[in-house]
Image (cartoon, rainbow, N blue to C red; front, side, top):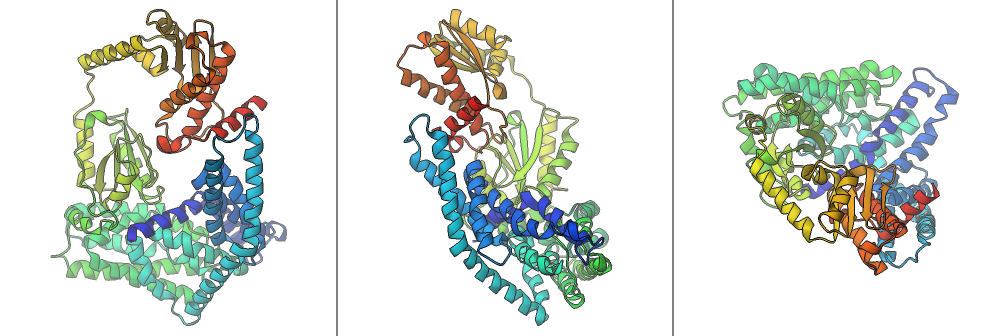
Length: 618
């Protein structure tokens, strides 16, 4: 159940997080130029309302559509959400979160239905008109149905918040916020609920307390400071100061979660700390002008209105002080029972996701096969980025050949050799990339499994096996001698003969008896040759590469599908025919790299033809 909620929250935050920069820009405009801002300016303040009313919902909807159906989903979602905006008196951030994925799903289903049924030459016409017509219909639906429906929901949520504020009950939300954060549900709450309501309130008053409920760094700071001074476990105490800096200035709240999980009773401290801060903010009518993301002290204070800077800072101090005092008392009272940072790893096993049963145990690392290490967290922007940077800096001197990067646990690239993630996210990581070796841990700063990975990678550097290389070359060359049509990459010909693509193609035609040769050139395109002609085709421009898994297979399959339709011998193909075949294959392979996975990245034929038509027009 928790895992399902987390995935739902990930989809919501996935629409908001890439657009946080726009929220921050709007927040700064609000804080600086509205009537109550730092530098009141009526002309510049005129941008505030259009950005909130139109820009932010369109960006969110577009991202939601893109997550489902790529660029076509992005365009149709942007069209459709305008209906929601015009059909409601509220800011349609939540409406955008509904309309974006819905519009993307509809255009994706349409593309599946018409795939293979569009006559040659009509691809662009059908693709453009389908987006336009379906987008118009969805905009009408949004105006009459989705917009009013979301208005009703927002009215109820806003009324609920107003009730809590009027009766001084809003601080009670801390009872739910802090435990939810430790369970990695903070993105669900913050971006799915608080931010939309906060935007509506900020549009009316220039500030909202909703932006302060989850992002306050005070509660976590108090816990980490208590561990710095009163923890008896040396490893834990030594890791805490670094965590303080990362949490307070970097805004990565996930860094203090393991310190709570080591001693679950200590969750009382951030709950009470946040309760006191929210109560203080409610009594002083405080609020932020925009979302503080990440939740660092720097971002938190940057979003503070001019007349509330001291109030906002005091709220952080109150939360931190209360959390520190309670954490210190709890640490002293439970010093004989609290687990060390190492022992807490067993405790984390009990927090496995319930959807799939047991979480996979950390696997033994096969050092010789590791080229890419991916650190993964829920959103892919906080603790995983910190962990990847720290590990890369630690290992780059000994292993400069390794690629260390970070991503969301649900979008791990298929070429990852090792995935490093919190144990609580292990089952999602295994599902996202089952072929990778999994290293689970509880603290990206200090964890025995991370140390073990480092030691394994640095103690045994990859050794080139000359016999294995010779055997591989022999096996490859045997296969080349059997083939009439050969598709080979420039890296492979360099491995075999250290020749250029042109020289290797001629070698395969004359010495190996091939009738047709394609030498793929990675992102540059492909060189082709048969007995009649040679040529080189460039790949499409403006390709945003996400995952190259399966691109070579998609090239080969696409080329064969075009070749078989001609009903000619490969040696007899003309340059015009080979140019058309290779252009189609290059385009199909290039477009596939914009999506994750192998089979799932295969793009519809209509989309390939549309891109080719655009290339011809250009």
